Length: 477
Image 1 (cartoon, rainbow, N blue to C red):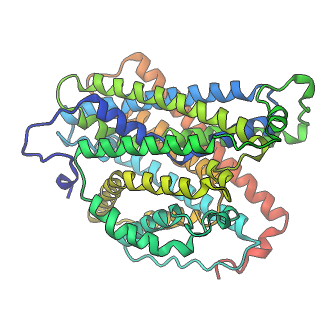
Image 2 (image 1 turned 135 degrees about the horizontal axis):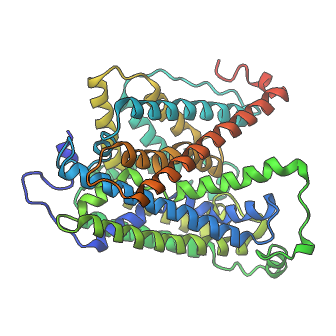
């Protein structure tokens, strides 16, 4: 099964593709749902913190997160170089092979810790957000790894499909797209399933270019002036550069909320830059030769392009909509003539991204099956997939991104790559600056992870002390 997941047959000589296609695929993989939440991040910095220059703070956070992600990719490249040449699974440059350099006990501890905390966080947030809603019965019977992976994939496709008949109704509940199930079924049968067999790099690169261009068109459409006569008044009231005299002081009682605002923005930026589970695939696409050097060049170019795109989208989006900025930028178009067009663009992006998504699903299912054969696999993986797939029904976009970035991103982007370099016995030995950066990233990742756990615990304590938990006793009955 592992050999079937490789991009090219193992019998043939290694192929070498131009770096341009790797950059296209990497840019497309980095840009995700967080792209549309960046204007809301600026709104959160302006309204939820005491800063007088939210655009400057946003730029600093953007540069720091992008720099740490770039370094994390470089560390992944070092691990891939070692695995490819002298690793225990020579020739296998998958993400799992790179993780195999770590001691099994350490890797198991990291995975188990992240999984249990993520499950607890998801269940807590579900209870907090749903206690005013009708009763929800969660059927959590576990019937196998493949079944829940299929369920997660169906959930993802289902949430992505808007209501083509009345998009304005989706404003209140963006996940309520039940009337479009026929469109989703037709798309799965005639579009997504045939594309799932596509594993060659050149067509994937073309699809990536198409997805990036369509995404840019969607954002341009969202940022197009609406010829609103009150637009200038709204822009002047929500200018990014606020005079100190006009900025209201933040009382001491809101220090916790100010810290939460910074934490949420950092977490959203973290998940917006995340594509590290596919780093070995991009490394393998570049073929023999100066592979690590070309890989680092592709990473640098990709992150520079994405950083400029994020900065432009965040600032322009907030300048356009001001305090009315929604958590999903496309929700600002609900009810206008632009909504059906942006929905069509979104479906086209999903269509172009589906081959890479299904490859990741195949790798995940294969790794889980191998782990089932090697040792007893508990049900937390399956339960976690179901909970993550169910979050879209209940939680706002920014909350999903923040929890995902702080819990999963902190481990996958910061802790695991740095641990591979420090504990993986990589040859040649890491340099002093690589070791120093690895320790910094490990500290930052653990701090972010523990801080998010603290925030979730704080929310749970407030929820219990306020008596709201009594209204959810029948939630899972």
